[in-house]
Length: 158
Image (cartoon, rainbow, N blue to C red):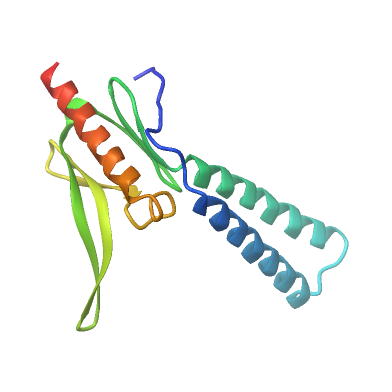
């Protein structure tokens, strides 16, 4: 599948908040580590450089996360891995109302886009109506969902 992949939406500003939050958390981790182990000199540099490199890699992946479409299929970039599916391998692109149970309570977490595959498995996407990309833009979430469905439909009819 050599082709150009495009994300049918622009990332939301909430991603930058997540990246800033992670920078603050890693800075705090570095500070605590240096104090706890009474590091100095090269130890401080090693901890700082390691956590800075980890932050850069994480920030890059956060910025790349999402669903990308192409003529041949759908590419899903997650935080730790990416996967590419041909349109032929997808049976349905559908919405799923996600809920979580905590004891006797059921907490609704909003709508997500789920991919049903021909082999019977399902794949969760990073497309979440209440996520950082769509929380303040619910109409964009619906538009992206419709774009995925129409691309899938076109591929099935071709």
